[in-house]
Image (cartoon, rainbow, N blue to C red; front, side, top):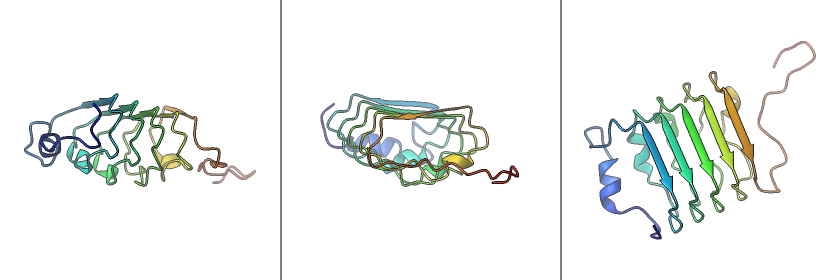
Length: 146
């Protein structure tokens, strides 16, 4: 798929609660080389448990309002060369168990709230911009307090 954005029918199908995709639990967006922006209507897929975005080389932005995806258990982002920072706060995604962000060399920081996920079991990160010099994890003092 080489278009810069998804066709209107995809945006319409994910755009509201009564859509045919409202019960979708797994979404994999793969090899959309020309895609620049993921549709903001993804926020309406409230039953979504797994979101995988793979080999979308030109995608520069991740949809905001991820906090609406409260059923999300797994977020994977692979080989998105131009993907900039995820601006959404992912702390409200309390069911998130796996976060994998690999080979996104334009990212300069991790998503806000990543250190606050209560059920995180797997965190795999790497291949970020050389400007990323710090991970946003809480510091622990010698008394064991954050």
